[in-house]
Image 1 (cartoon, one colour):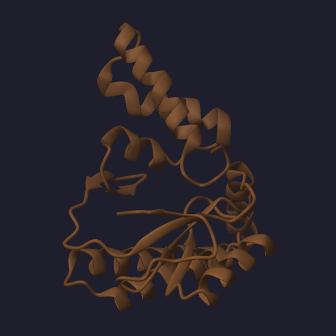
Image 2: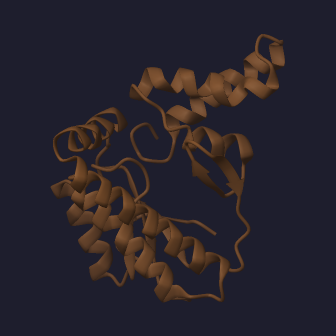
Image 3: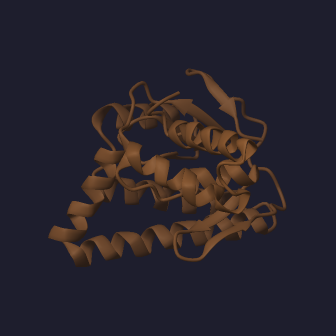
Length: 201
């Protein structure tokens, strides 16, 4: 769904580019860059993350400067997606973060560093020996970054609280924030109730 934090615009852009590649209008090795340029029309500035995931079709670690790395996980945590009830506009969220960097650059850099720590913790948890609590710590840290960026509006905050009240160990937005889907971590064997859920693994 559009504005849900699941990469709808990227999926559309990749579909268009794959058609162009099939027709011979775009070289296959230029598919990523061409799709990213199309997605810029949606968001003003695409990170390329969703496009890279869709083109690869596997979990990846993505860095705008260094590209992507395919990931192999040693275990599958009990993760679910659920819709927060309202859409989030990526372009608005990107502009909020840009403004933070312009107006409060040191604070913005600290939040960026904190998000890197979140990613590092999550990777360590997924590559290690089924460390659910390390994964929880990483997801919690990621949520705090969205809060620092002011990308958790009242509706999203309420949805997160409902999930936690139902037993979720940790919750964070999937996309740019301010709505869309959220990712929630649950204890092994727990099947969440109280909302419509999509199991990740």
